[in-house]
Length: 83
Image 1 (cartoon, rainbow, N blue to C red):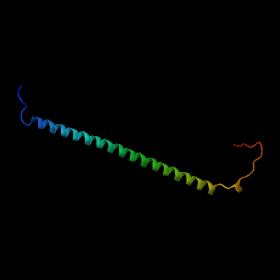
Image 2: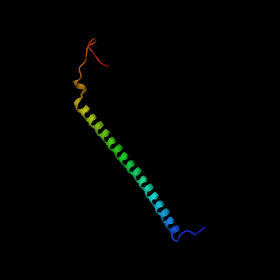
Image 3: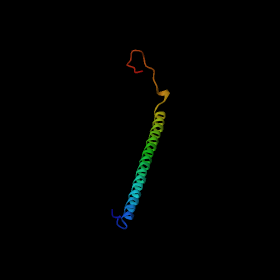
Image 4: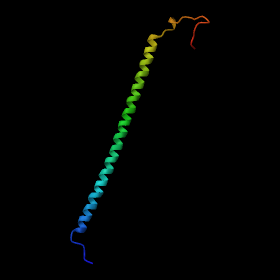
C-alpha cells in the first residue's frame, strides 16, 4: 500500500476544521433567530398590554363622565325592562 500523498491529510483536517466552524456559526445564528423572535413576541405582548390598559382606563373615564345616578328615573311595573 502506498502512503497518502503529502499534504492530503492536512487538507482533510482543514476541511473538517472549516466544516466545524461553519456548523458553529449556523448554530449561533439559529440561537440568534430564537432570541430575536422572543424579543419580538415580548414587545408585541407588552404593546397589547399597554393598549388594553389604555382602553380600560379610557372606558372607565367615559363611563364616569356620562353616567350619573341623579339622571336615573324610576320605571313602573309592566313596562318593558331589561335586568
